[in-house]
Length: 110
Image (cartoon, rainbow, N blue to C red; front, side):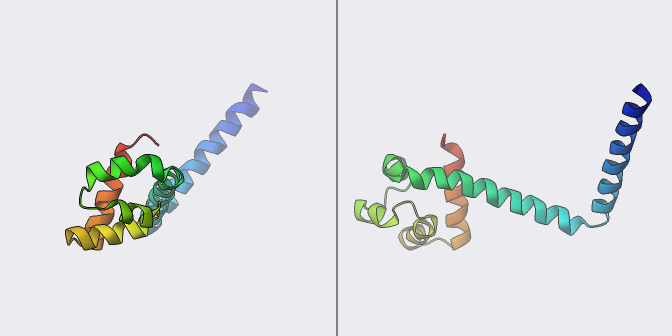
């Protein structure tokens, strides 16, 4: 029985080694995996914010004071609309708006 367990562990270790070697020759796959994982995490965090948008509007006003109450109602938890409003109000690029949103969302306890 002990021999079978050791054999199984050895096989698992060998399989992991083969996968790592295979991925080492394909770094573009590793980068893609990391990006997909980050996007999934970001979506999970944002879903929590969007679902409780009314509770977070005060935090949004603290972060981006130029946004009006009407704009916050219009945004209604939609990340893309928020990014667009930040671009309009603050005159920043889309990438900068998304970066600010990401940093703000990371600080929240969602």
